[in-house]
Amino acid sequence: MVTDSFDDKSPAITNIKKNESAIQVDAVIFTFSQEIEKYVIAYYDCEKVGEYAMACGATSVYLLRYHGKRFGFFRTWVGAPACIAPIEELSTVLNTEKIIHFGGAGCLDREIARGKIMVPTEAYRDEGTSYHYAPASDYIGIKNSDIVKAFMEEKHIPYVLGKTWTTDAFYRETVNNFEKHKTDGCISVEMEGSAVQAVCDFRGLDVYMFFTSGDLLDAPEWTSRTTEGQIKHTQHDPGHFDIALALAEYVVKI
Image 1 (cartoon, rainbow, N blue to C red):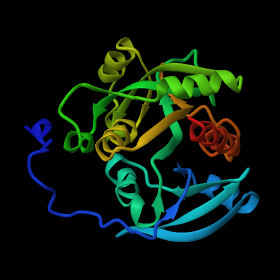
Image 2: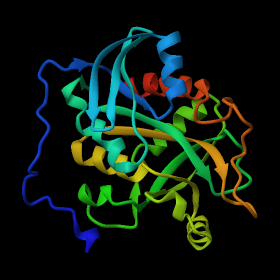
Image 3: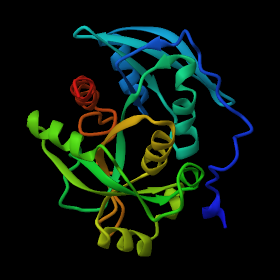
Image 4: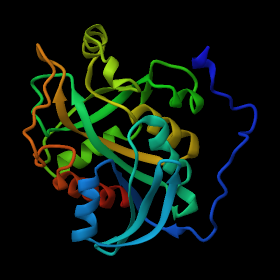
């Protein structure tokens, strides 16, 4: 069975060689948004310090200086296997134990407004990657959700707490599966959360996760809930990077 893929009894054939000269940073923040990457480069004190490469191209890695702290920053790829690749290769450029994971997610509850922050507590493992990093189970716990929740409350940022549904196949989010996951307490659907948590658990990293509420599945017909060219209240909203940066400052103190 594919869900029996977890093997902690034998070594991996391919392994990442840690760079002993990797840049020490207090935390790493990654985004999925090209618009946010442009915003950070334009408005923050950051410099390119390396790259993570794949066959589809390289992503630039930046050192960002903010309030006396040093943070890593890069734009990752969509989808669980591609998203976890830079996490696995993290130590080739950067050295840290804390990761801020944020991005857009589909919304399973029409009562949750577009752009609202969603804090996941558990992730349903409807993808393949996590089964190579953790024993099979329906859900994986998002270990630091209480810390993210405490941050949101301290900063007076409105948020919604609930489970998330992580899937590889967004064009196969069927009506029956939507109803099943909504009934089970999922408020969001995305493509990376459960895998990111699994690889971070396996590699001994702390990940802090939140999503931006986006397109709506809980409607007679799917709706994007955006207008053409809209940035505000989307996953490209620079304000959500500012939240991620403030969260990075917060978790560094823990």
